[in-house]
Length: 169
Image 1 (cartoon, helix red, strand yellow):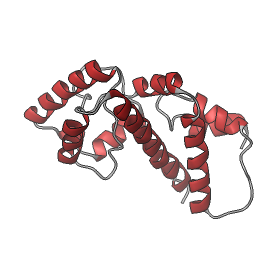
Image 2 (cartoon, helix red, strand yellow; image 1 turned 90 degrees about the vertical axis):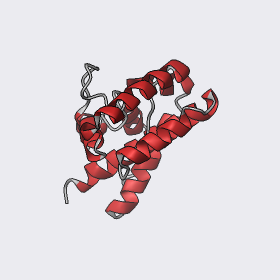
Image 3 (cartoon, helix red, strand yellow; image 1 turned 30 degrees about the vertical axis):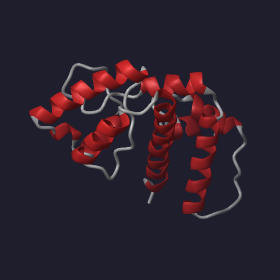
Image 4 (cartoon, helix red, strand yellow; image 1 turned 45 degrees about the vertical axis):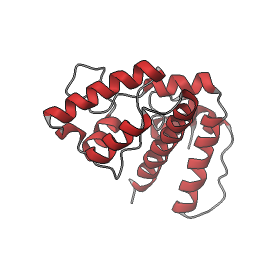
């Protein structure tokens, strides 16, 4: 792929952070023949390596670019198509009024405590599991939660990369 094609395909795997795909492209990807699963693992690893080596400030910018959970009903900034799909898949667009209120309360408390939104790879989780994680993780210290959020961002990127690669099947 040329740079433009690569950026079009993979520029959004890290939320509002196309710089990650640019740096992965610049890192001279291995183009040796392999199967789709091996390539997915390799590509996910390259993206994660670039992101985790970028330093705390750049990582924090990406964390802050993520939307809050279950915020589609509120007047928050526009969600990316990926975020809409992922949150819908976890049923976050179907929150009861009490769930929506709890998400709103937890989102505010979490952002006030950590200065970035709560981030979790929602694929395979339902609202109850997400809320359980939210309630537990808000008690973490800042260092633990930063590391957890970075890990979750990488997991989200992995799901997105796999989805892109599998879309052609």
